[in-house]
Image (cartoon, rainbow, N blue to C red; front, side, top):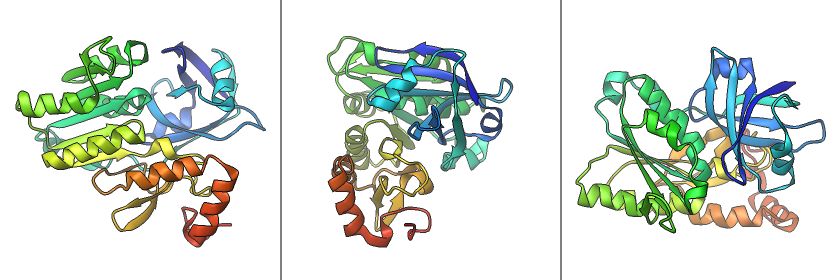
Length: 293
Protein backbone atom coordinates (compact mmCIF):
# COMPACT_ATOMS: atom_id res chain seq x y z
CA UNK A 1 0.00 0.00 0.00
CA UNK A 2 1.22 3.49 -0.90
CA UNK A 3 0.16 6.39 1.29
CA UNK A 4 -0.82 9.80 -0.06
CA UNK A 5 1.38 12.17 1.95
CA UNK A 6 0.05 15.40 0.43
CA UNK A 7 -2.80 16.41 -1.85
CA UNK A 8 -3.28 19.74 -3.60
CA UNK A 9 -6.07 20.84 -5.92
CA UNK A 10 -4.27 22.76 -8.69
CA UNK A 11 -7.50 23.66 -10.48
CA UNK A 12 -11.10 22.46 -10.56
CA UNK A 13 -10.13 19.32 -12.47
CA UNK A 14 -6.36 18.97 -11.90
CA UNK A 15 -5.01 17.26 -8.78
CA UNK A 16 -1.48 16.85 -7.46
CA UNK A 17 -0.56 14.08 -5.01
CA UNK A 18 2.70 13.24 -3.26
CA UNK A 19 2.85 9.50 -2.61
CA UNK A 20 5.14 7.48 -0.37
CA UNK A 21 6.85 5.07 -2.77
CA UNK A 22 10.45 4.62 -1.65
CA UNK A 23 11.58 2.06 -4.23
CA UNK A 24 10.22 4.15 -7.12
CA UNK A 25 11.68 7.38 -5.73
CA UNK A 26 15.07 5.73 -5.33
CA UNK A 27 15.55 5.00 -9.02
CA UNK A 28 13.23 7.19 -11.12
CA UNK A 29 14.47 9.90 -13.49
CA UNK A 30 12.78 12.68 -15.50
CA UNK A 31 10.75 11.39 -18.42
CA UNK A 32 9.64 8.14 -16.78
CA UNK A 33 6.16 7.21 -15.59
CA UNK A 34 4.34 5.08 -13.04
CA UNK A 35 1.18 2.95 -13.15
CA UNK A 36 -1.22 3.52 -10.28
CA UNK A 37 -4.20 1.47 -9.17
CA UNK A 38 -6.63 2.50 -6.46
CA UNK A 39 -7.78 -0.96 -5.37
CA UNK A 40 -7.99 -4.56 -6.54
CA UNK A 41 -10.70 -3.76 -9.09
CA UNK A 42 -9.39 -0.35 -10.06
CA UNK A 43 -8.19 0.60 -13.53
CA UNK A 44 -4.45 0.73 -14.22
CA UNK A 45 -3.59 4.36 -14.94
CA UNK A 46 -0.19 5.41 -16.36
CA UNK A 47 0.97 8.83 -15.13
CA UNK A 48 4.20 10.65 -15.90
CA UNK A 49 6.26 11.46 -12.82
CA UNK A 50 5.99 15.15 -11.91
CA UNK A 51 8.58 15.20 -9.12
CA UNK A 52 10.37 12.93 -6.68
CA UNK A 53 12.35 13.09 -3.47
CA UNK A 54 14.90 10.38 -2.82
CA UNK A 55 15.36 11.73 0.72
CA UNK A 56 11.66 11.50 1.64
CA UNK A 57 11.00 8.47 -0.53
CA UNK A 58 8.09 10.16 -2.30
CA UNK A 59 6.90 10.55 -5.89
CA UNK A 60 4.58 13.33 -7.05
CA UNK A 61 1.90 12.75 -9.68
CA UNK A 62 -0.47 15.18 -11.38
CA UNK A 63 -3.64 14.11 -13.16
CA UNK A 64 -6.81 15.54 -14.65
CA UNK A 65 -10.18 14.12 -13.57
CA UNK A 66 -11.78 13.20 -16.89
CA UNK A 67 -13.22 9.70 -16.38
CA UNK A 68 -14.60 7.41 -13.70
CA UNK A 69 -11.21 6.14 -12.49
CA UNK A 70 -9.55 9.56 -12.31
CA UNK A 71 -12.59 10.99 -10.50
CA UNK A 72 -12.25 8.17 -7.96
CA UNK A 73 -8.57 9.03 -7.61
CA UNK A 74 -9.44 12.68 -7.17
CA UNK A 75 -11.71 11.79 -4.26
CA UNK A 76 -8.81 10.27 -2.30
CA UNK A 77 -7.39 12.43 0.48
CA UNK A 78 -4.15 12.77 2.40
CA UNK A 79 -3.73 9.61 4.49
CA UNK A 80 -5.51 7.40 1.96
CA UNK A 81 -3.65 4.71 0.03
CA UNK A 82 -3.08 3.43 -3.51
CA UNK A 83 -3.08 -0.34 -3.78
CA UNK A 84 -0.43 -0.35 -6.52
CA UNK A 85 2.19 2.23 -7.49
CA UNK A 86 4.48 0.60 -10.06
CA UNK A 87 7.58 2.12 -11.62
CA UNK A 88 9.68 3.68 -12.79
CA UNK A 89 8.59 2.65 -16.30
CA UNK A 90 9.52 3.90 -19.74
CA UNK A 91 12.81 5.45 -20.79
CA UNK A 92 14.23 8.50 -19.10
CA UNK A 93 15.24 11.59 -21.11
CA UNK A 94 18.14 10.76 -23.44
CA UNK A 95 20.01 13.97 -22.72
CA UNK A 96 20.44 12.95 -19.07
CA UNK A 97 23.34 10.76 -20.20
CA UNK A 98 25.09 13.67 -21.92
CA UNK A 99 28.09 15.16 -20.07
CA UNK A 100 27.08 18.27 -18.12
CA UNK A 101 29.71 20.35 -19.90
CA UNK A 102 28.08 19.48 -23.25
CA UNK A 103 24.58 20.24 -22.01
CA UNK A 104 25.72 23.60 -20.68
CA UNK A 105 26.59 24.61 -24.23
CA UNK A 106 23.02 23.99 -25.38
CA UNK A 107 20.08 26.34 -25.19
CA UNK A 108 16.93 24.31 -24.52
CA UNK A 109 13.33 25.51 -24.74
CA UNK A 110 10.60 23.51 -23.00
CA UNK A 111 7.03 23.90 -24.20
CA UNK A 112 4.31 22.69 -21.83
CA UNK A 113 0.63 22.50 -22.67
CA UNK A 114 -1.91 22.22 -19.86
CA UNK A 115 -1.30 19.14 -17.69
CA UNK A 116 1.86 18.59 -19.78
CA UNK A 117 3.48 21.10 -17.42
CA UNK A 118 3.73 18.29 -14.86
CA UNK A 119 6.18 16.07 -16.82
CA UNK A 120 8.08 19.14 -18.06
CA UNK A 121 8.81 20.34 -14.52
CA UNK A 122 11.14 17.48 -13.39
CA UNK A 123 13.18 17.88 -16.57
CA UNK A 124 13.75 21.60 -16.05
CA UNK A 125 14.39 20.98 -12.35
CA UNK A 126 16.98 18.29 -13.12
CA UNK A 127 18.83 20.63 -15.50
CA UNK A 128 18.69 23.42 -12.90
CA UNK A 129 20.22 21.08 -10.29
CA UNK A 130 23.18 20.59 -12.66
CA UNK A 131 23.63 24.32 -13.20
CA UNK A 132 22.11 24.16 -16.71
CA UNK A 133 19.72 26.96 -17.67
CA UNK A 134 16.61 26.41 -19.79
CA UNK A 135 13.68 28.52 -20.98
CA UNK A 136 10.09 27.34 -20.61
CA UNK A 137 6.70 28.21 -22.07
CA UNK A 138 3.51 27.21 -20.26
CA UNK A 139 0.36 27.32 -22.37
CA UNK A 140 -3.24 26.96 -21.18
CA UNK A 141 -6.75 27.84 -22.31
CA UNK A 142 -7.17 30.33 -19.44
CA UNK A 143 -5.52 31.44 -16.21
CA UNK A 144 -7.33 28.88 -14.03
CA UNK A 145 -5.61 26.06 -15.95
CA UNK A 146 -2.05 27.37 -15.52
CA UNK A 147 -0.34 24.98 -13.10
CA UNK A 148 3.03 24.77 -11.31
CA UNK A 149 3.93 28.33 -12.28
CA UNK A 150 5.79 29.16 -9.06
CA UNK A 151 7.66 25.86 -9.11
CA UNK A 152 8.69 26.41 -12.72
CA UNK A 153 9.84 29.98 -12.11
CA UNK A 154 12.19 28.66 -9.44
CA UNK A 155 14.06 26.39 -11.87
CA UNK A 156 13.69 27.95 -15.35
CA UNK A 157 15.96 30.72 -16.58
CA UNK A 158 13.02 32.43 -18.29
CA UNK A 159 9.35 31.47 -17.97
CA UNK A 160 6.72 32.59 -20.45
CA UNK A 161 3.00 32.02 -19.87
CA UNK A 162 0.40 32.10 -22.63
CA UNK A 163 -3.38 31.76 -22.45
CA UNK A 164 -5.73 31.33 -25.38
CA UNK A 165 -8.16 33.91 -24.03
CA UNK A 166 -5.53 36.39 -22.83
CA UNK A 167 -6.71 36.16 -19.21
CA UNK A 168 -3.09 35.79 -18.06
CA UNK A 169 0.33 36.26 -19.57
CA UNK A 170 0.63 36.56 -23.34
CA UNK A 171 -2.56 36.18 -25.34
CA UNK A 172 -2.23 33.33 -27.84
CA UNK A 173 -0.92 29.79 -27.97
CA UNK A 174 2.56 28.38 -27.38
CA UNK A 175 3.45 28.64 -31.08
CA UNK A 176 2.77 32.38 -30.98
CA UNK A 177 5.26 32.62 -28.13
CA UNK A 178 7.88 30.52 -29.93
CA UNK A 179 7.60 32.75 -33.02
CA UNK A 180 7.94 35.86 -30.85
CA UNK A 181 11.05 34.55 -29.08
CA UNK A 182 12.80 33.34 -32.24
CA UNK A 183 11.68 35.83 -34.88
CA UNK A 184 11.20 39.01 -32.88
CA UNK A 185 13.61 38.62 -29.96
CA UNK A 186 16.20 36.71 -32.02
CA UNK A 187 16.57 33.93 -29.47
CA UNK A 188 18.36 30.80 -30.65
CA UNK A 189 17.63 27.28 -29.39
CA UNK A 190 19.48 24.02 -29.94
CA UNK A 191 16.56 21.85 -28.87
CA UNK A 192 12.85 22.08 -28.07
CA UNK A 193 11.07 19.66 -25.72
CA UNK A 194 7.27 19.78 -26.11
CA UNK A 195 4.81 17.96 -23.87
CA UNK A 196 1.05 18.40 -23.95
CA UNK A 197 -2.00 17.42 -26.01
CA UNK A 198 -1.23 15.67 -29.32
CA UNK A 199 -2.59 18.56 -31.37
CA UNK A 200 -0.29 21.00 -29.56
CA UNK A 201 2.77 18.80 -30.03
CA UNK A 202 1.91 18.37 -33.71
CA UNK A 203 1.86 22.10 -34.43
CA UNK A 204 4.91 22.82 -32.27
CA UNK A 205 6.79 20.16 -34.25
CA UNK A 206 5.65 21.62 -37.58
CA UNK A 207 6.87 25.06 -36.50
CA UNK A 208 10.20 23.89 -35.11
CA UNK A 209 10.83 21.86 -38.26
CA UNK A 210 10.32 25.06 -40.24
CA UNK A 211 12.69 26.86 -37.86
CA UNK A 212 15.25 24.05 -38.03
CA UNK A 213 15.20 23.24 -34.30
CA UNK A 214 15.46 19.54 -33.26
CA UNK A 215 12.40 18.65 -31.19
CA UNK A 216 11.51 15.96 -28.67
CA UNK A 217 7.90 15.18 -27.80
CA UNK A 218 6.47 12.93 -25.09
CA UNK A 219 3.61 10.67 -26.15
CA UNK A 220 2.43 9.87 -22.64
CA UNK A 221 -1.10 11.21 -23.45
CA UNK A 222 -1.82 8.19 -25.67
CA UNK A 223 -0.80 5.53 -23.15
CA UNK A 224 -3.55 3.33 -21.68
CA UNK A 225 -2.17 0.07 -20.29
CA UNK A 226 1.44 1.23 -19.95
CA UNK A 227 3.02 -2.17 -20.59
CA UNK A 228 2.84 -2.58 -24.37
CA UNK A 229 0.06 -5.17 -24.16
CA UNK A 230 -3.02 -3.16 -25.15
CA UNK A 231 -1.76 -1.62 -28.39
CA UNK A 232 -3.28 1.79 -27.61
CA UNK A 233 -0.03 3.74 -27.93
CA UNK A 234 1.13 2.22 -31.23
CA UNK A 235 2.55 5.06 -33.30
CA UNK A 236 4.49 5.53 -36.53
CA UNK A 237 7.84 7.26 -35.99
CA UNK A 238 9.62 7.71 -39.30
CA UNK A 239 9.49 4.33 -41.04
CA UNK A 240 9.12 2.35 -37.82
CA UNK A 241 6.27 1.28 -35.56
CA UNK A 242 6.87 2.23 -31.94
CA UNK A 243 4.95 1.97 -28.68
CA UNK A 244 5.02 5.00 -26.38
CA UNK A 245 5.08 2.95 -23.18
CA UNK A 246 7.93 0.56 -24.00
CA UNK A 247 9.91 2.47 -26.65
CA UNK A 248 9.30 5.98 -25.30
CA UNK A 249 7.55 7.94 -24.11
CA UNK A 250 9.86 10.46 -25.82
CA UNK A 251 10.42 10.55 -29.58
CA UNK A 252 11.69 12.82 -32.35
CA UNK A 253 8.76 15.17 -32.91
CA UNK A 254 9.67 15.69 -36.56
CA UNK A 255 9.25 11.96 -37.25
CA UNK A 256 6.01 11.25 -35.37
CA UNK A 257 2.89 10.76 -37.49
CA UNK A 258 0.57 12.84 -35.30
CA UNK A 259 -2.41 12.62 -37.66
CA UNK A 260 -2.33 8.84 -37.53
CA UNK A 261 -1.87 8.87 -33.76
CA UNK A 262 -4.83 11.20 -33.20
CA UNK A 263 -7.09 9.20 -35.52
CA UNK A 264 -6.05 5.98 -33.81
CA UNK A 265 -6.61 7.47 -30.35
CA UNK A 266 -10.22 8.29 -31.26
CA UNK A 267 -10.83 4.80 -32.68
CA UNK A 268 -9.38 3.13 -29.59
CA UNK A 269 -12.05 4.71 -27.38
CA UNK A 270 -14.73 2.31 -28.68
CA UNK A 271 -14.82 -1.48 -28.45
CA UNK A 272 -15.60 -1.69 -32.15
CA UNK A 273 -12.60 0.50 -32.93
CA UNK A 274 -10.28 -1.61 -30.76
CA UNK A 275 -11.38 -4.80 -32.49
CA UNK A 276 -10.88 -3.23 -35.90
CA UNK A 277 -7.37 -2.05 -35.02
CA UNK A 278 -6.39 -5.44 -33.58
CA UNK A 279 -7.58 -7.25 -36.73
CA UNK A 280 -5.96 -4.72 -39.08
CA UNK A 281 -2.59 -4.58 -37.30
CA UNK A 282 -2.22 -8.26 -36.50
CA UNK A 283 1.03 -9.19 -34.76
CA UNK A 284 2.16 -5.56 -34.62
CA UNK A 285 -0.90 -4.46 -32.61
CA UNK A 286 0.94 -4.89 -29.31
CA UNK A 287 4.25 -3.57 -28.07
CA UNK A 288 6.96 -5.52 -26.27
CA UNK A 289 7.64 -8.64 -28.30
CA UNK A 290 4.98 -7.64 -30.84
CA UNK A 291 3.33 -11.08 -30.72
CA UNK A 292 1.48 -11.06 -27.40
CA UNK A 293 -2.09 -12.33 -27.29
